[in-house]
Amino acid sequence: MTMDETIKRINELYHKSQAEGLTEEEKAQQKELRQKYIESVRGNLRGQLENLSIQRPDGTIEKVTKKK
Image (cartoon, rainbow, N blue to C red):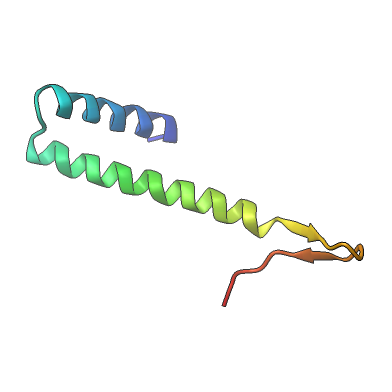
């Protein structure tokens, strides 16, 4: 399932939950899809941050690293 399909299904489940409620199976699927989406967003953000560099006022360039 692509991320666009995942988001579409999350939205479908949300609207159904507001209109008529979800079955236990649908609630479990909604939780799983939301977790998958969150992991994807975190991974994309982490990837962007790992490729980020900062130029200091003295002209040196420093690669952003993970806090310890």
